[in-house]
Image (cartoon, rainbow, N blue to C red; front, side, top):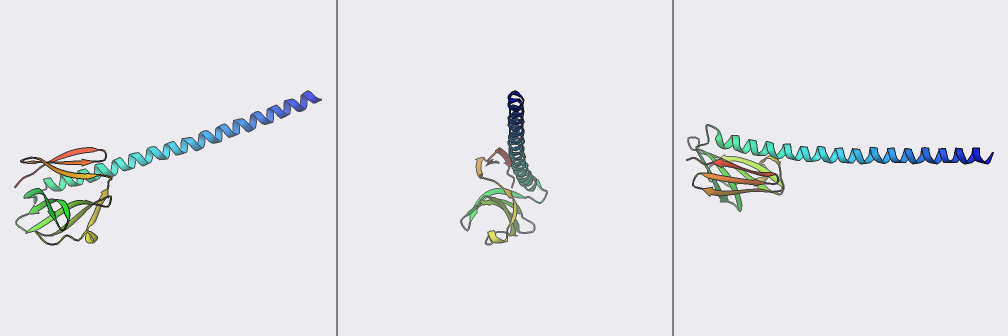
Length: 146
């Protein structure tokens, strides 16, 4: 009689331990999957931002591409000389923003359009006709033209 009770007790303990192991595996797998999805989403966002910047700088209306500073903001200037307008792409508070306006007018960050998010977005002139954009996940180059 005692052996039967001990056997049932061991079977119950084994089942409880197996249940806990399976539950922990499910929880950790879900966390790992969510982390992978978050990393991929961040990567997709940053690639979309860089693609947007490259496409804007290569557009037919981009007569002059350069790095400028105005109103305390350093920005990538993409000018349409014939229209007298300027597309300003800059980084502020973890966001890559775009502001469109007449050339040399005040930049209003609160009226800017958010292109995407980044932890780092730095622009450097690295040659007479080359701008390097450094980001969290890598860097890219833009050819300037004027």
